[in-house]
Length: 56
Image 1 (spheres, rainbow, N blue to C red):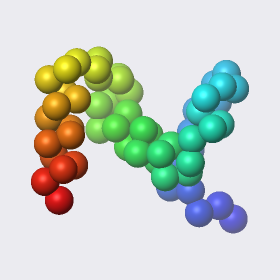
Image 2: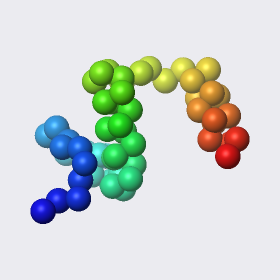
Image 3: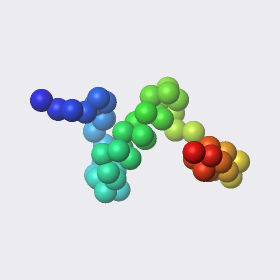
Image 4: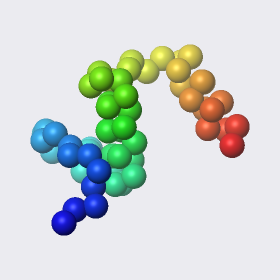
């Protein structure tokens, strides 16, 4: 039995395999809440994310 919550879609082997289980779970969580679309990375979004993470 697997402890994984999300079933990850199969895709090409690459950097995904080098991520930790936690990193993959966060990426999948973001994809779920964004309805399968990956938001584009912008400087404003990076700043907002850093501010959010630094506030804890």
